[in-house]
Amino acid sequence: MKSFDFKDKKVLIRVDFNVPQDENLAVTDNTRIIAAAPTIKKVLAAGGIPILMSHLGRPDGARVPKMSLSALVGEVEKAVGATVHFAEDCIGQAAEAVVAKAKPGEAVLLENLRYYKEETSGDEGFAKALAALGDIYLNDAFGTAHRAHASTAIIAQFFSPENKGFGDLMNAEVESISKALGSDRQSTVAIIGGAKVSSKIGVITNMIDNVGTVIIGGGMGFTFVKAMGGAIGTSLVEDDKLELAKQLMVDAKAKGCNLLIPVDTLITKDFADTPAERVCPIDEIPEGYMGLDNGPQSVANALEALASSKTIIWNGPMGVFEFENYAGGTKAVAQAVADATANGAFSLIGGGDSVAAVNKFGYSEKVSYISTGGGAMLEFLEGKTLPGVAALS
Image (cartoon, rainbow, N blue to C red; front, side, top):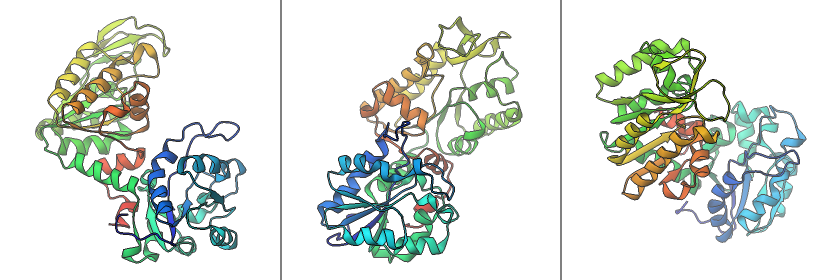
């Protein structure tokens, strides 16, 4: 963004305003809007006209009234401190008329891109119609960078190299994740938690290749334990991934990566926020019981690994942290990540649950970077090329 002169220019910005709303369509979490605000404000301050485009929900090519971006206008105006004109379409005469009316220092918010199926199919004609609205194109929507959609990957070809680039948020995301992945291997720790191994196979595989220690947490730990012959009671498990878990353990050993699998857990009979019955070795859970959080020894092992780390990548919680009785493991890890960061480590947090946990426990200001893109960050960590990034690289 630093190289652009925005004065009197129409600046088409792909933002990620896919935000949660209540039954009255009021925004319940404006994090993504706030994250995009610095880029929008820079264009406004330089005398440009930001033309904002985003999707909201999955209308699948239909005009679904409750998925209209018109409900976001007030929230966007508050975040950027300027008038925001709403266009009832994202291409064609309706959009062009609103863009023509906007003055420098004002913004335009286009209607939901996914009211057109051509957005998600990556249609070139639709991308060209969007491109016609702007002089400069900025992609600031890291959360959708892993999709080869018209507004994220195809549109870039209609702008010359000097008239397209990353917004501040997109740039920070790419720089932060690249920095984490490019760090010294032995002093880098990846914390991979969450319910299922299947959703994190690519990440774990790539982390085994690139980091010194991988801490496994959450429900996926039971698949590894069962693969080693342990008794896990009624704990969450993916029986069709047992062979994969075995292979990942073999690969980690062969590549010199310390794969830290939980050794104890808090057990209970019901999936509910009731006090745990006791701490149990993770491979000796009685029938009828399930583990819902890392036990004290598993937490201690994780903290020991984090204490000497220089780079930390965290995606996924250690247990059912939404339950007060089973939040201890995740909270202890969040504290350790904050402590390591205070001691000079670079910490990258991503994925909805990890971000929610860091926010819930009050550590959001105590880590180096919080990624706004769940799926996009996962694919980046898997070593995949993101279409939205590649189109501008």
